[in-house]
Image 1: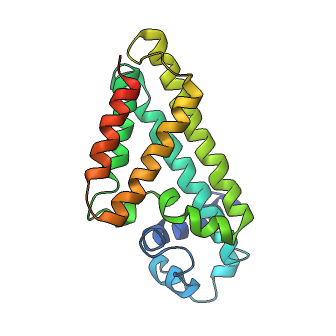
Image 2: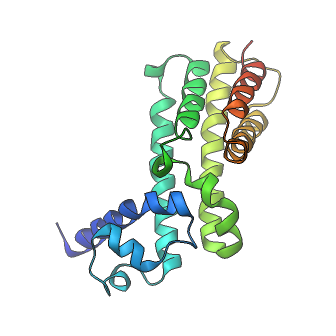
Length: 197
C-alpha cells in the first residue's frame, strides 16, 4: 500500500469512527478532541489528515453519500424484484435506519442538512449533489417500473421521484419531532397510492 493509500485509509477510518457521534449529536456539537478520541488517534494528529474541521465534514459527507448511493444500487437491482419491489425495499431501508436504537446509522442527510447548509457552502454542495443523485436513482427505477407496469404512469418519473424523496425526508423529521412511527406509516401508504397501479 502506497503512502497516499495509507493516508486515505486513515482518513476514512477517522471519518467512520466519528460518524456515529456526529449522527447522534450534530456536526457543530462534536469537537475535534471527541473525533480523535473515538478514532483512537493521538492528539495533534487531526491536522495531519484534515486541513480543518470543515474539511473533515466534507470528507464525512462524501463518504456517507458514496456509501448511501452504493446501498441504493444494491436495493435497486433485479435481485430484489420488479421496480415497485425495489422502491419499497428502499423505503423499508429508510424507515429501518430511523427506528429507536439506530442512532449511529441514521441518515446524515436528515441530521445535518439544515445545520451544515447554513454553516458551510462546500458541505451544502456535497449534500445537494448527493441527494440529486439519489433522486435520479429513484427516478430511473420509477421509469423502469412504468415501462414494465409495476408502477403507475400518472406522473413523470423525475417529478415523482423528487416528490417521494421529499415526502420521506419530511416524514423522518416528523418522526424525530413526535417520537412516533405514524408519519412513516402514513408516508408508506401515500407512496403506495402514488406508485402502485
